[in-house]
Image 1 (cartoon, rainbow, N blue to C red):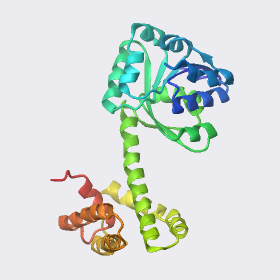
Image 2: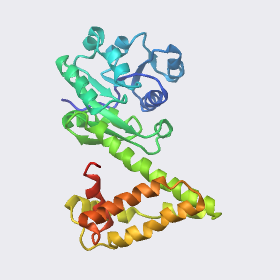
Image 3: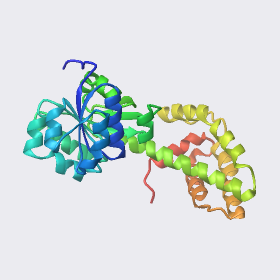
Image 4: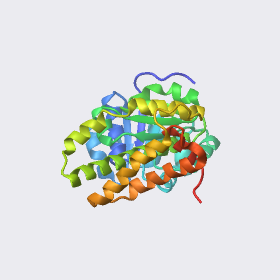
Length: 295
């Protein structure tokens, strides 16, 4: 599997906001880009930027040595790819799947690709289209054969997000990005809840934002080390003390008239950790509660 040269022929199938951003990045980085979308007018701005607009998905597949698919979901992806014409056009090429799919759906497509002589990587984009367009931050997670990922480092890197390999098992990227979502959205909800409490109490939200932005990186690293070892002794602060402190968040939320469902949920995990014998352990021991399904 030879390493790529600097300039590649790349096709992008699916020109929604993200697909268009990926195509723009590839054009800006000097690749020969062919694009296709069911709504042909979406290709016009990319044509003006230097892309070739294909007349069909199979024509786009035939034009690129690397073919990127970024459509709504598995059904949309399968309807475009699982045809004899596209299979023939993709033979011996790299197919990169960016559509929103489950791990199982990605493995189904990988199996089809293998049967048809197509190389396959699945990817999950941890960035907004604006990040891709501005080349400012963002990561794309990939899973599949590591050798394939490494051999195609040039074109993967030229989509203006840091490519990161997360596993040889196809579908790992689809699973991994949901773990990031699990953190991100709960983290942001906690952020919004604190801001709502500030607002309701008549306190300066900008001060809250500054304090929160500067807090917590070292704690996350320490928690991560404990979780990796499944050992929670020698806590900075015992779970019982942490839970007692957090109970005041629930009480104050109710007093301020702010929705208290989120802190009550968090408090429920802390209480369960204490009930499970982690009262004198570190806060990170809550991880053990999360490993068990609720009854």
